[in-house]
Length: 166
Image (cartoon, rainbow, N blue to C red; front, side, top):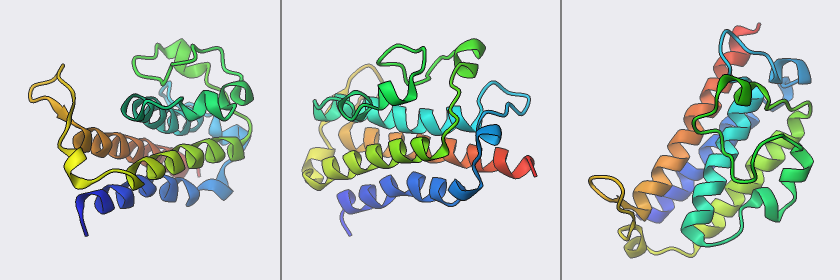
């Protein structure tokens, strides 16, 4: 198994974890705030958006959010490029989603775009530096690793919130 294959396996993990709770999601539990501003809806939305925005930067392609009409379908009062980083409590609480299927469709579309991108990369391209604002500079492979790990962490938080609601 080469590095690209490992990244493809990892890229699918957030969707796999989200699908494990899909049949338990309702409009009520999606938007519950367990003593925190980030609801399950926010966590699943952010998981997809952070992958989408960063993948768009890497690939040079339009984000799934706008290319596939999710911005209109979600109808949130947020900027087109908003992905949730640095949200105020009010902004986080403004992410209200009634339809669990919409969240899952969006996450799946973004993961599919990520897998499509990974399918055209070689191991050598993973070493290319894509962000020099950090020390050490961030390689394409490290960025792809971090966006999948971040998404998986947030989906895991959504699983936890769902578990404490019972």
